[in-house]
Length: 128
Image 1 (cartoon, rainbow, N blue to C red):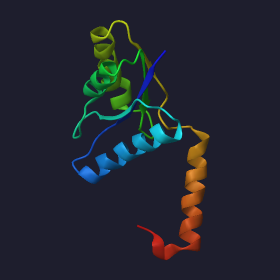
Image 2 (image 1 turned 45 degrees about the horizontal axis):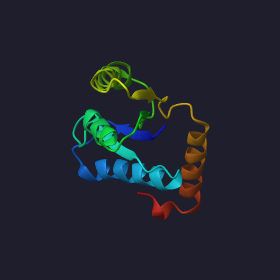
Image 3 (image 1 turned 90 degrees about the vertical axis):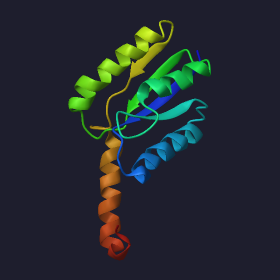
């Protein structure tokens, strides 16, 4: 079964923030050897989630995995995302759509926080 992945973020008026999500999606594609990865945005960025799903379906994917690029669950993941997923599922009857948990609770986050704290203590002049 051919799988496509959508890295789903909120979106920002600041285009470099949106580009950072696109870069993370491209890094995921390379790191996992996933040929079908798209970044998508709830608002303030393009493509939207439905547009990203259309791109993947046009490439022949049979399953879409949506990864919420959100630190914690909230209104957008509880209300907005399910509505988008339902529209994608209805539009593409033969496509399986799966949604992962948000980044909240993933053990890798503790390592990231540890790395950031250590960097601040070792090289405080490099902080941005």
